[in-house]
Length: 260
Image (cartoon, rainbow, N blue to C red; front, side, top):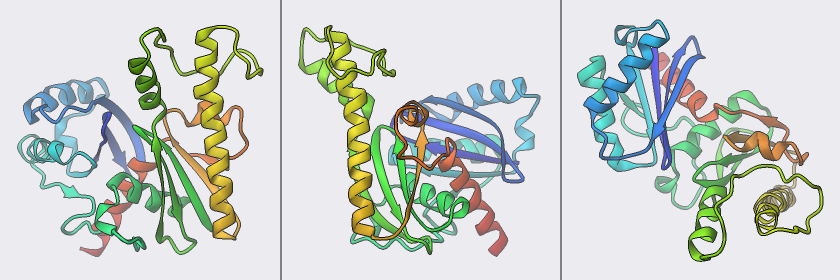
């Protein structure tokens, strides 16, 4: 069984994958100081709760945008699962798609993995919108090549910056506003309108500009925890794929294993 690890800036997601199907997934807050020993205690307990054992894992693949986290995850794989991990984008696990940008080495692993999975699941030109620490827009050509994209502040990051910079503004949760009105009558409702409808406007506006520039029919794929929240009041998304990055890791592992 494959253990796919997606180490992001906010969370590290661990997923058990068998036959290309995700059997279980867990997440933990990202902390580069967390040791392999700490990961193992946490994971062993979760595996047991799923009726699994660490002995079931015979392959590991890691994708990370946090370089400092990689060493401890590699140690986890070797010490506790007795497996030499594949590292997405490195060594034998080089990207199977063209990174058609000026600085291909700077493309985040999560964005390349999203492109791989989106292209495998959907035909034609694509825009992948990922609601993570940053909100990213990735353009994928019909042949699977990664063509570039857009990076905007993530929703929670924007809200944190607003609250931290303005002493009298309260901390609020991200949710759909109660009213369709964009004129708030309380401080909290005004903040929620600004964050929610502001991001809807940004997403729709940027996707429209990408479509105009690509000049071909474009399918929009959303991923990340907040994708379904924004899908409720916008028709910009053609599909929601919550596990796109993990699916990309699984596909990459499958392709590398098949060519070995």
